[in-house]
Each structure stands twice: as C-alpha cells, then as structure tokens.
Image 1 (cartoon, rainbow, N blue to C red):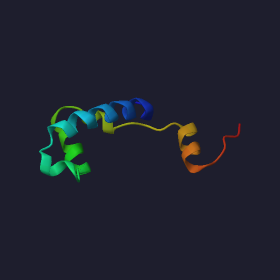
Image 2 (image 1 turned 180 degrees about the vertical axis):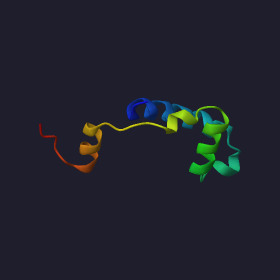
Image 3 (image 1 turned 120 degrees about the horizontal axis):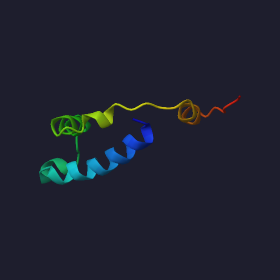
Amino acid sequence: MKKADAERAIRSLSKKWFQTLPESEREHPSFGSFTTWLRTNNYGHFLDFRSTKVQIMQLSGGSIKN
C-alpha cells in the first residue's frame, strides 16, 4: 500500500476512533490506543505502507536528479 492511500484511510479512521473514546480521554488521546484500536478492528494493515523515492526526497528537502 502506498503512503498516500494509507494516510487517507488513517485520517478517516482516526475520526471514527475518536468518536469511540470516553469524554475523559478525548483531551489527550493516545496514539498507542489508536494503533491498538486499528489492529483490534482489522485496520492494522493501514500501518504497513511504503514510501516512494519521490516522497522520501520531498520529505528530506532534496531534489530528484535523473
């Protein structure tokens, strides 16, 4: 799965997960709790993505040379 595909899914799923949290946990939600929820609900595969060379270069501020 490509990073962009995973990112779209994770953004949507984070909203769904947040709605399941008790009010007391909403002020400081836990990333660990979110990843556990993803895996428990069979969405864990969205955490396994790959970056392309272009994405890595963009993130590092470098340019792509052929």
